[in-house]
Image (cartoon, rainbow, N blue to C red; front, side, top):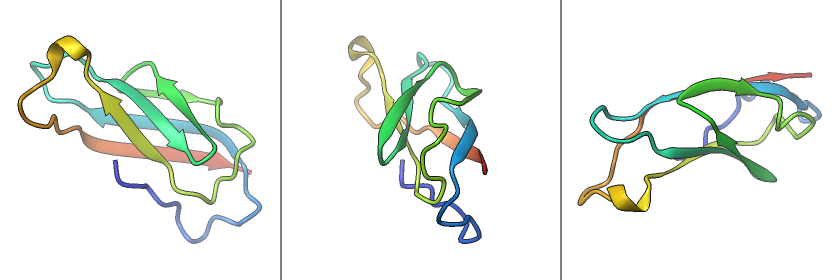
Length: 92
């Protein structure tokens, strides 16, 4: 995905406590493998929505991005469009 920038109101010294995410993959396709990436590390997402503390302690004032991949046996002829990308970051 394109980078999802935090609001300008997030202080430079803020750190992530937990994140929540959601996205929508098209019906009729297998669920893609998904990751949420911070500039310092990516975490695998177990489903289309959820929450995690795996990025706790990392800077909250940087963009995050999603990455998706379909299994090799399900490679389409055209790009698969994942919609409804949302990330909520709780920070200190």
